[in-house]
Image 1: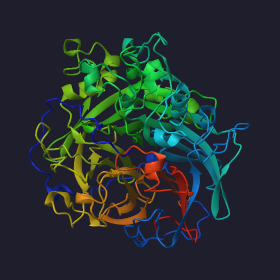
Image 2: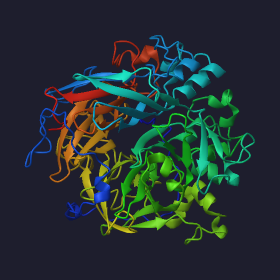
Image 3: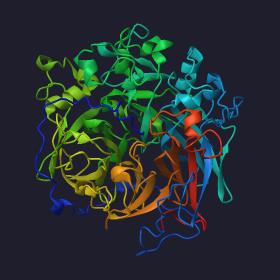
Image 4: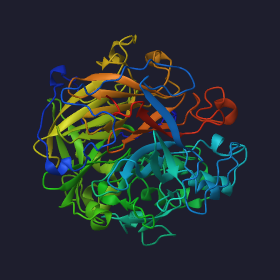
Length: 633
């Protein structure tokens, strides 16, 4: 999500130790590992259907880099073709409820609840059957530009507009099928579903029913209405979908003088200007202070069971979760990695107590409710340690303000502060290389790093005023459940032509900045998507990078090539492949977003009318090689 820097959270004022030695380039080495049979099962093998599959010795990246463009279009390599599959406002395919998008944005809240939401983000593909020609796409809809969502923007405000904005948030499930060389949404589909900011959800895990989770509307503290600001996502080996709730605090109206808990979570009067509290009082934290505690969780959804309730998995911890990425230990347990996309926040992992059972989502309904949550400490010598967020461990005691495990989880940030975790430069998406057993995390940027009043540079975050961001990676000692690891920097993003030496980076290949989305494909290619703010693009360190992009990295050689450039003002985010690797699904979010990062039809028309020449619309794009071959080769 592009961030308004006046609103971006920077609430970590803990005194956690920072490491004052810059990262040693000698540590940036590739560490090889073995292949686990269980982990291999996460990825389907190449299936018939590709015109040509890469043979042994074939370079992992075979396309010619695309140039940096400034047109109102989407640019892919010459051997590829891209087409729009599903844009904001298109009907998802619910039988008997398929309202068409109205170009003047006059659709009602009820119609929006049956349409694709706004601002597509994390996405995953779930095959239906054994092939790669049919499946479900499940994707997040992160937030709304209410200036575009409503016919007259926010000139007037009403309960109907709040309801429509809430309906444009959440998650969409659509069925898609390949027909010839193209793909189409299947309508109607028994799987088609919209999950919104008012869909009932079950709360599970140690914080379910906790006093901090109870409200007047839900005195049991076990049922929450809705999910929101869903950014990145994860796909579990048992076939479910994990959606992270990111900047949830921005939707709540807070008191003029918040207490320590509300202040640590960024609560402020008026929030980020969504104005939901004016017509939905649960978003008024001055009246319902515990409602905010019911957001910031990772939500599990079973796309194969459209009648199932989403579940907020509190054992995975509360935070401004960008997403959740799953690895599997050699003995079959789930390990869920996540990060908090905010300045100076933390990286987490959860290790399940029990092994994954055969039988899909139904057989693993409680798997993510039992286990151990950890937060990462990165040390200056290239080593690191996972610190358990467990009640009674170290300072996590009643004397320090933590009455039980539920409170540790609700106050995950305060618990991580107390443990001395390493404050990072906006940890966002994570990707797991299951063959080499490496984990990658994008650290998008942090212009406050090393500035007055803020944390200094350290080994893991080595650049002051870090405008360009970097990608860190680590290898656990032994297996994914280990409590210690070795870390390196995969790349420090930047442009060698930049005037500031500290922002030039060490990219081997095409320049880029603000890495955000990460996707590791089964061939071991790391796909990198960028999210530079419209306030930065084309200026200063981004003078030669006017638009966001998607790149492919060979993690063995470090080579990075530019694969896609998006339309003006957009973020390139979310990537998924069909099992035969011949189709790549990518999300283009908020095309035409203005430098103010608040869009309205009059202003945005100067920037973009992608994809169909009218009001700009976020959309899922299908990318294929013209010869039908494996994407990336």
